[in-house]
Image: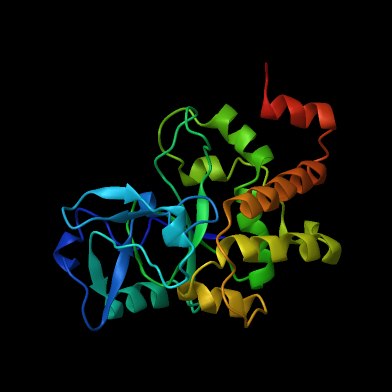
Length: 244
């Protein structure tokens, strides 16, 4: 795993930012635009304020969030080339967090784009299927419990991540991946702009429908599966869900 503090510093790199889309420009993703398994969590409005994206908007596979800024595709390509990254998608997590949030660890896959420093990236040379498992692990309820015990401030830094009990790639069996990967794919591939991610996971079809009830069921199945991988009993998982 390699970490990157985003691709652009939102202060030091501001001279590279454009206020409108154009040829040769990519959106600049900020952490607030994404949430767990969801790269279309929020969008900017014409007045420069952000708002949550409605489920009805997410039901449109062509809908993409509007960023606050855009950056040159060449600048993005140069930074990713320096890191040896060749995929047409990225994975990152929210740097700003806290134990009072609904979730402390929040990660997602995003389309190839610029990424601000509040959206640190993690990169791996493992196959995409194992990247999908890593994303599921990152967003699992069991790991989040550990994060809530360990995080003492408002920043989820590399040093915290290195203390978390992530599963190593060799921990996953073919049976594990056959359960995890299709669910991660369905949760993340809800728009055409992540087609390259879907293709890397062996899917050439259309994006999955954004259905909140279906997504809740998939996430619950992943949470339960990871709880079993961690060796939790039913009572231990119940405690994580509701310590009272």
